[in-house]
Length: 227
Image (cartoon, rainbow, N blue to C red; front, side, top):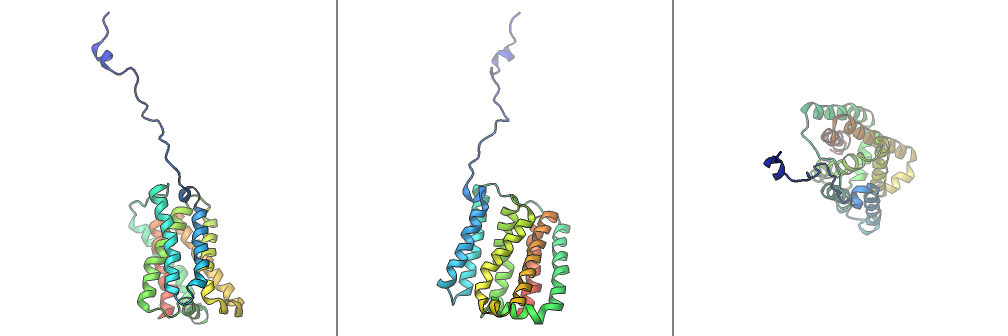
């Protein structure tokens, strides 16, 4: 019996379509804590170098977080943002309102307004709005909820984000931190609650919802008391 021409023409070995291709892992992607240490060290190191330029220090520190996140997205395995449903974004806004309004009503004059004046001294309303809506949410969402939360437990991410806020903000208001320890403790607890809310929204409703949640909460808790 003669062999089938179609069978003889077919290759003797089929290529393995499922063969895994080894992807390079870069330090920013495989070790996100390395990026956290770099950004925190930059924030601390810039404190004595830029004592009279709060805006530049904030921009460089948040820019370091955003830079590590973007590099990890390009070179590593950071989760991509997919198409978001409007209801998830709505949940992000709702959670921000639920947490922010009680803060604004009960702590505005006692805690929020004085703290904001010390955290962002000399800033114009336009500059502060740009920080709270664009710079801060972009950097922290991409790094903590986009990069870190994909590899660590959500409550650890919330604690690390709070430590970052303390390292970033407290040197600016150091005299008030020392003189009013109870107020400082309240501010730390507020920051922790806010960061735990962001990681919860990220876990429940996605990255974009967490992003929107931080923007809205920044406006309620930080921008309105500033006005």
